[in-house]
Amino acid sequence: MASGGVIGETLGGPRVLVVGGGIAGLGAAQRLCRNPAAPNLRILEATARSGGRIRSERGFGGVVEVGAHWIHGPSQGNPVFQLAAAFGLLGEKELSEENQSVDTGGHLALPSMCFTSSGTRVSLELVAEMASLFYGLIDQTREFLHVAETPVPSVGEYLKKEISQQVAHWTEDEETKKLKLAILNAFFSVECCISGTHSMDLVALAPFGEYTVLPGLDCTFSGGYQGLTNHIMGSLPKDVMVFNKPVKTIHWNGSFQEAAFPGETFPVLVECDDGGRFPAHHVIVTVPLGFLKEHQDTFFDPPLPAEKVEAIRKIGFGTNNKVFLEFEKPFWEPHCQFIQMVWEDTSPLQDTASGLQDSWFKKLIGFLVLPSFKSVHVLCGFIAGLESEFMETLSDEEVLLSLTQVLRKMTGNPQLPAPKSVLRSRWHSAPYTRGSYSYVAVGSTGDDMDLLAQPLPEDGTGPQLQILFAGEATHRTFYSTTHGALLSGWREADRLIGLWDLKMQQPHSRL
Ligand SMILES: Cc1cc2nc3c(=O)[nH]c(=O)nc-3n(C[C@H](O)[C@H](O)[C@H](O)COP(=O)(O)OP(=O)(O)OC[C@H]3O[C@@H](n4cnc5c(N)ncnc54)[C@H](O)[C@@H]3O)c2cc1C
Image 1 (cartoon, rainbow, N blue to C red):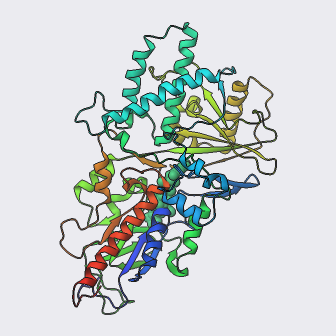
Image 2: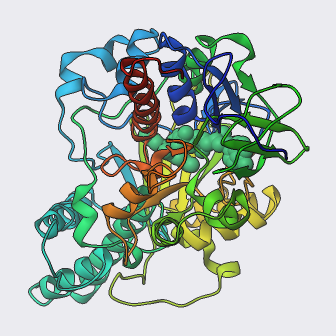
Image 3: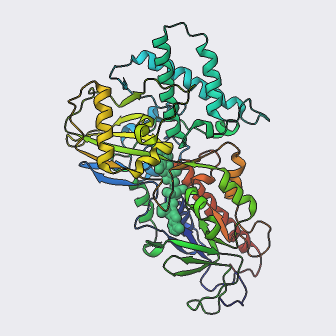
């Protein structure tokens, strides 16, 4: 790589590369393309599709969401809701004022059926009583926001401490007490799915309340979530998106010249797995935190500053997967929207150590009943943590067999027909994701997310804003969501636009 020329001088305006074509990358590109400085822009996407963790697949005669499912908090303050509404992707009910003003506090409340692992139905009153205890405690965790010291480090330990105090006052018979604890255990597993973690013991207590829930009853896209990212992509000039271009290394703080750009010098050079080289003035990195955790030592040259390396290590990134099962006939009640599973003899207050092979399915929280398309009946199970990662190593047949046995036991019907087919997500094995989404782990705080979001170089030496960071894990209050990811992409696009505006104000300045 030859050096020379004046870095930052360019003939055709600033060259910007976005690494990753998920909603953060697409959002950043959309914002930049609309700016009068309209940079020369490319999105380098490793896979053959855009959308990243927004992934809708044709299946079971309709569309299933392999990744993001709901718009969380669909109301005016949510940019995903606003975009989806503007693109005409939402129905009347989702757009209604009434829907937008519902305050769920972020807790799932659907008409349910609840089964135990030995095939008895659990009274919904008892489930509601435990839900109110559990979510009351979850809400209490907000008290620890900004306190210097918490009684215990993690959300899990806090919940368990409070629950064990309450248990001492329970007056029911031993069987009912055991069932109540098993129901609470099921809520711990639900919370693991929401936080995308193996255990709530890994989730930091003090910053937990910083995650912000917007008003609105969570809603879905009848035509698929990916309609949203497809629309954003459709609004970009045709040649912006480059598919099947995994980025290998981002060389920065250099002065790079490429034959294709005679006389120009660039501070950044992006090198792809296939040998492709893209010089740039600015690169917006939107790859998932899971990918960064695995590759950050070779992904940046020179390496990232030590604090950023630490932030990447400290912020949590876990797995939540979905298992879709198709049935000939529904075995659930007509209005049931969620089938909850309670594993008897489990308790949040006791560790039941058993091998993943024999008990991975005990982490499954139950099944969402999907709206039936063309009389096809589909359940969507959710499972988080190491059990979820273990499930990824099994074949479809093994998963189908285990879950058929589970469902037969739960329903008390040994003749229950096996599901016709199964479809699963495998987010932990996905090489360009390596998990599902981020959480604030014990030992980290929201400051780490802000630190991750800081552009490079940090010290003001060399051309500014060579590498910018977006993606859900860089949003301090909306991490793990599509709206957090979109806002982070817009934030970094605005940061660049701010730099160009500043330069335009300086006399005789060129971009
Ligand atoms: C199972 C599941 C359920 C979810 N449910 C919800 C939900 O209901 N509601 C909600 O709001 N959010 C949900 N989420 C989270 C949401 O999907 C993400 O927060 C959001 O989509 C992340 O967007 P992003 O642009 O930050 O990252 P991504 O969508 O992951 O985009 C990053 C892109 O970078 C690409 N990439 C990676 N490495 C490279 C490389 N080396 N070179 C080039 N490209 C690369 C990837 O292929 C990917 O396309 C869910 C996620 C999962 C996995």
